[in-house]
Length: 446
Image (cartoon, rainbow, N blue to C red; front, side, top):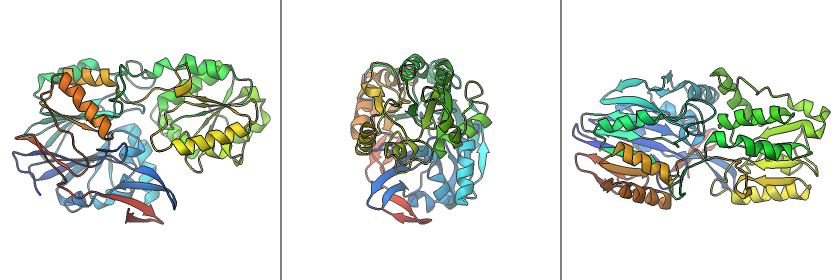
C-alpha cells in the first residue's frame, strides 16, 4: 500500500474512536509522516498497564518514513516514543518544552532516537511534505498544530487545542494567524473532538485563580490539590494561590517534579513557584501547608492514592484537611477515583471536586462546540476529519462542521484509510491495528 504523487492519505493507528494513544500517519508520493505516538493506561488483572498502538504497518515501511512530529508533551501523544521510536530510525521534531519532557524518557528507555528542536511557526520540508508549526493553546505549553502542504493538497492538523486568550503560561491564542490560513486552499482539517458534545466556550486558565484561592483560603487545615502535572499554567496559578494565601508549596509525585524541572529549564514557573522539600512538611502548622499531588485519576502508587490509603511515607491527612480535585475525571477512571474519595472520607478529610463546585476550579484543554465552529468557519476546509474522541464525540464534531458550512465530513476509526485527495473517501479497515503493552521490558500484543 503506497500513496502516489496524486494521493494524499491519512491513516490513524491510534486515537480515532478512543481518547488517548494517538498515532497519526500522513501519506503522499511514496512517503509517510508520523504525527504523535502516545500511550494510554489500562487497569488489568496484572495491574496498571501502559498500552500503545501497534505500529506494525509503519514499522514495515520505516524506510519511507521521513520523520516524526510530536505536537505537545502529553503522554497520550509522546508516551510511546521511548518504546517504539527505535523501530523507525528517523528524527523526532518538536519544540523545546516537549523535548525537555521527552529527552529523559528516551534516555531511561535506552532509545537512540534523535530529537530535533524546532521553534513555533517554523517551516521545514521533510520529503514531499512541507510543514509549518502552528502555535495553539492547550493545557500544556508549546502545543502546535501543523500546516502540511503537498503537491496533492493541503492539510491542517489541529493537534489538541482550545481558544484561550489568556493561558497564564505562554502566548494566547493567535486568532489572526489561524484566520489567515483561509487564504490557502485547505483540503482537509484533522480536528480534536474531545469536547464536541459540550456547548459554548471552554473556560480560560486565567479564570481559575479566584476560585482556587477562595477554596484554599477557606480551609483551616492542610490543602492537597490533585491536578495534571503537565498543566504548567495550572501549576503557575496554584503557586500564586499558595503565595496569596500564606501557604508553603510542596510537590508530591515524581511526574510533578520532572515536569516542573522541564518547565523551569524552558523559562516557565519563574515567579511564585518555589516548592519546599517534602520532609519539611512535618514542621509546619497545618494552615500553612499547600500540597500539589499526582494521582487525580486514582492511579495506583500516585501521591494522592497513597494519601487516601494513609500509606504515604511523608504525610498523613487528617480531619480538617481538604483535598481539591482541580482536574476532570478521564472516562474509565471513575471507580478508582471513587475508591480514593472513600479513603479520604473515612479519615474525615473534606473533598472538593471541580465538577461539583460552583467555583471555577478546572479548565479543559479542549475546544467546546463554539470553538470548533469558529475554527471551521475560519479555515473553510473542503473536508472535516474528526479525531481524538470516541464515536459520539467524533460524530458531534462532524455535525458541527456540517452546520458551519463544511461540505464533507469523513468519520472513521483506527485502521481506516482516509483518502483526502484526489477524491475524498474512506476505505474501512484498510490497515490492521491493535495494541501493545510493556511487560518486563518487552512489548507484547494485547
